[in-house]
View 1 (cartoon, rainbow, N blue to C red):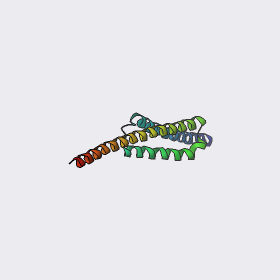
View 2 (view 1 turned 30 degrees about the vertical axis):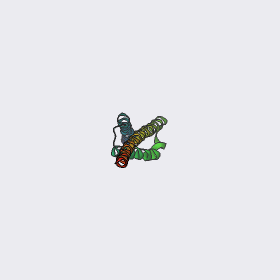
View 3 (view 1 turned 90 degrees about the horizontal axis):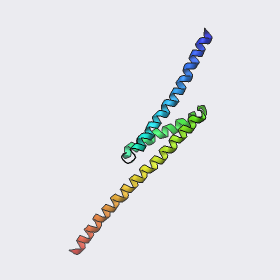
View 4 (view 1 turned 90 degrees about the vertical axis):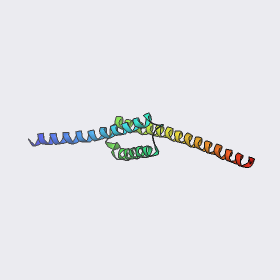
Length: 119
């Protein structure tokens, strides 16, 4: 009876540990997917929230990676790499917008300066 109880408890513990890894990885997959599908539409706040989730994932990964299989580690590393690439695209889009805004501001300034000197 004790052996059966020990086996059941051990099985439950192993299953719960494995489910937490898979669930957490699934959460990060959804963050990466959302970022990829909306890279041009995410606000600064959206990016900050995604960055926080990825950083937490990285911290947990460092703590748990010795307990993970090679496939789980590879998948986690792939997700972190994909997010880094998507994040760079997001920064590039923000930079293009900033440069475009600055260009329009300079056009306005030049027009104002030209109008002022002509009068």
